[in-house]
Length: 141
Image (cartoon, rainbow, N blue to C red; front, side, top):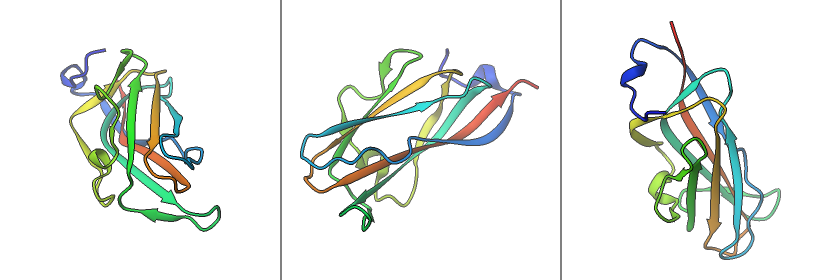
């Protein structure tokens, strides 16, 4: 699948969001958890933005945090490659948590693709992470 959107000009776009949901809790330094996003089989997906939310604290009393000392790696199974050469700081995508990370140019994902997202904690505080991809499903006119 070509990762440019040239061949998709003229296709109908419908806004759609994919999310990992909240990850399993990480409670130790260097602990890694994996989450997945399954792209639906009904269409190609064009991703425009990533947003990351992080909550920390005691179970039932977690708080959303703007900055988190953790790393992320995303693997696209359709091409069998990671997004980053090594896991990178989640703040590279999250920033201060107020704005989504802009994928420029947008990234195209084939239908029936599984994305594996690995989160690694660099703190010993109970932490859960949620990654959301903002984009559009593409349908031929």
